Image (cartoon, rainbow, N blue to C red; front, side, top):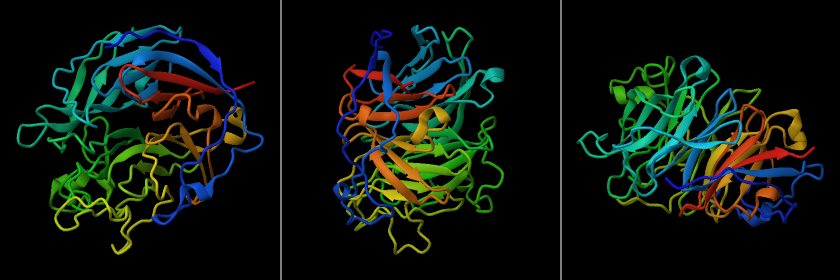
Length: 400
């Protein structure tokens, strides 16, 4: 793992607001440039601090109650940033990690009862996790010692049977978050296989919900009565590559974000049993020209936001909350990877789009953003995704 250093604090000037994104819905005819809106005139000035650098594709970050930040890197490895600024490696056995293309060590989340259990979860490619003994994707539970020096596995796997594209690692997902009821949500990718999203006998291209202690499907899941037990963990289907999951404060609604093909990155409002309309079977090939939400599918759930053409490759998402954020309070933030920076959406309680704009201080200076995540301390944390040991963990706070 590359050397890290606790780094500098910088206050950035407000820059030009560039647009990414467009109108709500899943229309492929929308043009991102036509929907440009500026940040609110009373937007808070933001301070950006680099907490760690020298990272390589850090995928996710989560904050413990003591203020420590735990992050992982796609190619393997955990890093803790302690409250005093110390940046240290957390030793863990990753000998079975399968990192290929977009797949590797991906989603990470701490248990809501972390203080009692010191338990966290990852979703990662595993060399022997497939049904045929080859690569697959698994959710694993770990515990970490109080000094943040080592993390043994305690449930290996907690959830298995998530397929992967063994040829390329393409569309491996895989985001983890907890819903308001304490159940573990798992967003998966379709493995670039055209039949997977609409097939309830595979966990690829789905939103899953499980008990975090047992890994078993959550009570109340919509497909528990189906004969095939694989379907029992599924909450929603018809997804391409779920890269973001966030729970809206005040409503407890679950939103997901997924990267589009030729058109339409999407943000979706999760509903139990929902079909989100990705069906790229085509003529037997993986047809990436079809709409992200095929309206010819009966009951297909329309997106609450879509990028249109061109896409921006949305990734992780999080809601900002707290009076300290002023006019930014309540925004849904999306990491941007095809372009740079962070896109902000304001959604009504019913999921309808109210406004959208880029966050000026994060535009252009830090490159691709994989995961924005609100910390328990009310600050915003970001992992960049530029590769070659150039990535950073950022802390963003509103200025006083």
